[in-house]
Image 1 (cartoon, rainbow, N blue to C red):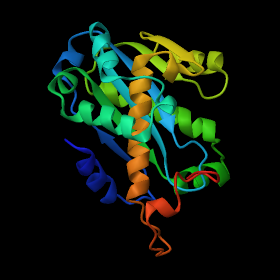
Image 2: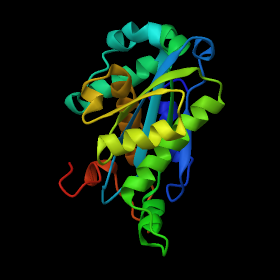
Image 3: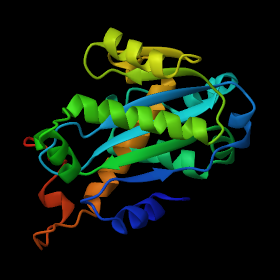
Length: 224
């Protein structure tokens, strides 16, 4: 994937009633050097569109790359600025060689079914399971993770204890507003938000409605 247009084409090819993944190639350096990974989400609790969980990772020694990209609290960035940063992650060789990412697009159907089936899974559980799954996939890909930073879902102490039990050999930090504190979480937030924004731009209504994304906005009741 080498452009936002390619991302949109990929998203358009998927069934938006099903969950699916999007990811970069794993930089070789991330398999040899100790790395940090950030986790964040976009689209929690909308009335339309997916919830997207994103992770970003890079060597501990390459934090300066995140800063040069402009990774900051993604909520404080405009959509154009987020697109610009993500485009750099896709196209600039220094970023490609050092920064990896992965996103899970979680369908509204899956969220509803999880919350209303007999053995209910809350939105928090859906969120945590996605984060844990993404982290495990990065580890399974051979990335040498030493530190993980997570924007919390629910009480941070409880979430951190859960992650520390699952990943006992990795330093875990779970915090409120982590995307505005840790650049690697900001990078993950940008991955999640840009993926969700472009998923909405190519959203296909199962009911057969023919609507442009500008007619329904962000998918939230007050969204524009």
